[in-house]
Structures are given as C-alpha cells and as structure tokens.
Image: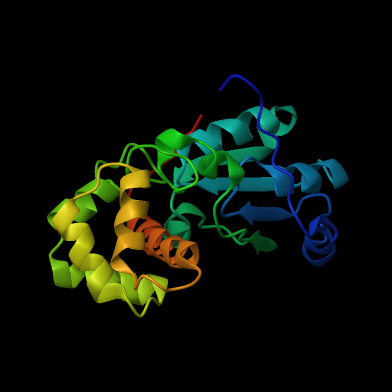
Length: 219
C-alpha cells in the first residue's frame, strides 16, 4: 500500500459508552478491520486487553500498524469470527462486531468486491483461501447460483440473472455487471441496485465459505 489507510469508524461515542473501558477489562474486536474502534478504545483506556480478529489478512496488517503503540496489550488473530468460541476461551467484558465492507476492500480493484472498479472476480475476504467468486460462478450449477442470489441478495430476478451469468462466465467485475444488467427487462429501473444485490450475495456466500477452523495468531 502506498499510503496509510485510516479507518474512521462511526458511533465511536456509543461504542465507548456501552463497552465502558476500564483498567484490566478484556474486549474482543471481532471485525477489527483497520483498527478504528480499537484505536479509540485504547486511547480512552490503554490498560485494557484486546483480541483483534479479522479474516482479511490485509486489513489485519493495517490494524497491526495502526495499533502498534499498544502491541503488548493485543492478540491479533487472523480468523473468521464464527470461530470465536475457539479463539477466545477466557471471560471477556465486551465484544464489538462492526459488520460490512470497508473502503480498504471496496476501493481496491484487485479485490473485486465492487462493480465501481473493474477488476478480477475475486471477492475473497481472505486471499489465502483459493475459492474466488469466479470459481463460484463457473463451478456452481445454475440452480445453486440462483439460490445464492435469491437467498443472500433477495433478488426476484435471481433465476434469469443466474442463467445469463452461467452462459457468459464473466471473468471481471465489469463483465459480471453487464451480464446482470442485460438479464433484466429493458425498461427496468434502478438496474444498478439489482447489480449491487447480486454482488452482495456473492460476497456473503464467499464469506460463509471461509473454513470455520482456519485461524492463526499473528505474532
């Protein structure tokens, strides 16, 4: 990365209020991302202990850099928070989940999360996992792909969209976007919103693919 990524979290005051950091307390930031919320918690009270978890290794490295002043207070763990019961076995005083994508992920064309930037159909939160969105499209049956779009995108045109995607086998985000748009009725409004829902569905499915038992502590 050529320039540092600074995560500017929302609802910082509310997070601090409800977690109420105090010396000796233990917290879990289950989706640490760039470390924005943890940064503010540690600034308010540097004598807490923290588990910083993220399945995106790129984001986790950013968090390690941004939170380096408190390195001895933090366990950085590369994992999906669905394994939380395995990752954290001691009692904790609070857990924070900040769900969703970050701009670090969305704005990188090579990650393939958004159709706003042309790039490969990747969509992996953890790039060490071999299964990409392109693999999903090319290896799933028409019915499976339609089910994913319908279940995770709540899209009523899921069947026809899945059919066109399977026919065209797009390799890039722009090709996938075009396939989705072409699958819709010509006079359909807000076609971009449909594309956003389909991309969302593929991202969610990719996140769920992450192996539950796959994790490691980052030293």
